Length: 361
Image (cartoon, rainbow, N blue to C red):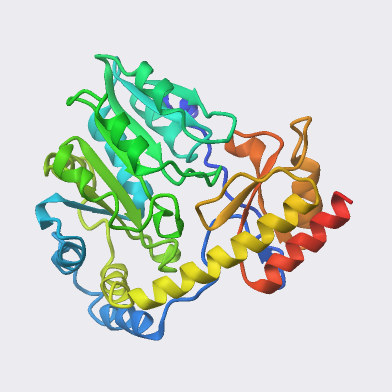
């Protein structure tokens, strides 16, 4: 007799992880939207120092990091939620807000974790297609909100399509959302966005909309992807209380917290990384368009490129991998015929362009 598992295990999709970790050191790993910049030495030292106390559990309130974020963003610590990456907060939001009979609404394609929420909770997922420019159709999303809606997710800039909407559009959308609906504005890539403006631009929305949660992460521009640190800036403290109720205690390691606190001290380094990334984004976008390829208007550290009009991106993804370049295929991400390529080092970026030129001459 085999083990019997909950029915939700059959519903939850498998997260489409990037391949290529077994290909060796010379592979251009451009599939996971990581930054090519390694953590600063003081950040590494802070994590090492925290490890000396690994025989003790971390502070379950995580006050050093909450206070550091509060000082930076001028948000009360009671309205700051932390997680093992922003993904942890998204999944916890689903656990806290959704149940059979409830609805969750989001644009599609978007972050691959979003479909897990309805599958795990038994709620109904409403996926709203993006517009022709691979952007969220906020009017269409608003039209789907009903008395059963508990959660709306807006990924801005959007993953995987890299596009962003201006805050004027986000504000107009929030005006249409009933107060009982939690809106998560997923800004994992906001530091790279010229459309949004800067990481402070969306914060005033929190004072106007108590049902709003703005998600951020240390995995991208801060270069701490392996340590898993995310945070939510909340319009009220109710979201933080709820997600903490449904999670295990000690979800953030002491080393991760210490590294994040230290990383916040070096905003000049963040700005340097953004400048470098935006410059590379411009150059590669122009190179791809010069070759006749459609590329979405990117506000992130990655590009969304149409490589197959027939919707079959697998040959390109496979061909790139055979040439030592790992990207993400659009089929697995909800956008067949496209690839998502992370901006890497100059050498990695050129390797991608050269490999693509061989495949699509």
